[in-house]
Each structure stands twice: as structure tokens, then as C-alpha cells.
Image (cartoon, rainbow, N blue to C red):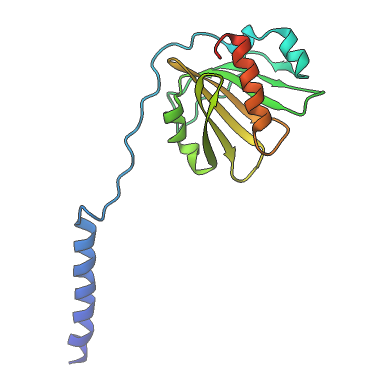
Length: 177
């Protein structure tokens, strides 16, 4: 008699679990993947930066033709750019053109580690991503037609506002504001 009392609750538990797993209303779905732009990157933004802007901002090109590599989570992402930094500026960041769109960037695998804020930089739709664990580590993506301009690194403050101001100046210098 005791065996029957023990088996009945176990069977009931297994039955209810199997019903829940197969219930379409309960299952979760991942958002559809967004395509990266298939267009070629039009230019390396570092090749077009005026020396006067770099001097005024206390920056220099530390590593020309140096870009973030594609990652396993974003194997189709492409980049073209350089590493900029000081001294005297405390900023150190990659400046790159990329085939990522703002929407793709916000839904990419990095989204778990960053807080995103939509911004208008110049006349362009942009997003500012501030790292949750390391305040002041920012990614600023500005949508420019079929590609983006990405600033990725540290800008000397914890709010990313210095990076946003710098992005505005860079876009104007590139003729993309």
C-alpha cells in the first residue's frame, strides 16, 4: 500500500512536467537574428582624420590599420580602423568602420554586458553602450547609411559622455555628421 502512495505523486509530477514542456505558450523563443550589412566597408576612418583634430584632442594613432577581430559570436562582423590614444589624453579606443547596424549591435551577444542608450549624434542615429562591470568602458556605434562608425574603448570618464563628444567631432571631420 505504501508503494502505491509513493508512485502516484511521482507519476503525477512526471505527467505535469511533460505537459508543461510541450505547451507552446510556455516555451521561449530567441529573437530572430538580424543580418549584418553586406556592403563593403567604404573606408578606414583613421585614414581620413585630420591631424589638427588629433592634436586638439591630445590623441595620436597608436596602431594604424589595427581593428577588432571578428569573434565567434559575430563571425560575419567586419572592421577597418586603428587604435587611438594619448598621452596627454587618457582616452584609448579603437576607431573603426563596421558592417554592424545599431539594431544588430544592441541585440548582439555583448548586450548582456552593456547598458544601451539610444542617442542622436549629429544627425545620425546612434547607441552608446556602457559596460556594466567596468564603468567608463564604452562602445559608441553611429549608423552611417549602410555601415557604422564604432568607437570602442575608454574615454577618460565613467559616463561615456567624453566619447560621445569625441564621436561628434570625428563624424564632422569625416563629413558624416
